[in-house]
Image (cartoon, rainbow, N blue to C red; front, side, top):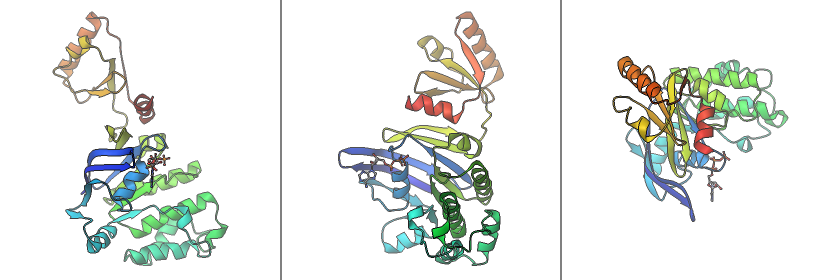
Length: 289
Ligand SMILES: Nc1ncnc2c1ncn2[C@@H]1O[C@H](COP(=O)(O)OP(=O)(O)OP(=O)(O)O)[C@@H](O)[C@H]1O
């Protein structure tokens, strides 16, 4: 569906992405995770064609940003979460929603359903200049919902929201995913990604350091410290390696006899291990420590 092919982008001497390739499928929530200043917004801006990489290209269903015609066609398919500074203070929230529905050729009446779904009816007919931070944030999200594009790019959508509104937006995100939208969200709210993201990408040093499959957030792993001795016992097993020498062996994805054999080796060689799930927060700490 959406692909990023061999992307390289530098700001002067500063390397942001080096030969980065990624493919995304519809009907998924993708979490984009990294410490401040790593490149999450830059990646979103490249997908939107606000930034042109030095090398590589973005592709959506075979279309690429080649000329004005392609740019318009692609922008019909991709909508980004607007920045609050892009809102017009003297317009109402409803005006903004109608504007986005209109720009993306969506029926104006869809706006009423979005207002109800996002619990905005008490303020949506007031001017934006009277809104709190969280009310504006909900409006910006509602504008993306009104555009109703197959790809939705959400940079820090949960910023400034109270827990009830985080839960509300998360519920709408799940509905959008069920309608086969591709949702890419850069976020620092790791517990929220843990619950809702299907896949979490950890950006580091110009590349994806970890592409974590989070479809089964309760998946159990056997966790063992990486040593030369241990690696000798893993030949038949599926495992993942984390940057700080931790080996994760997914229990449900391995043959039970192979796991039993590994347990015996661990016992005989006095190698310590533990069993449990791995959280996005734990991965974050390990990758960026
Ligand atoms: N237009 C620009 N010119 C020069 N450097 C830039 C530009 N835009 C971003 N950068 C730099 O690129 C790096 C990545 O920035 P980016 O905004 O993508 O980070 P981020 O991961 O989204 O951070 P945050 O979590 O703070 O939003 C930063 O070091 C930033 O200073």
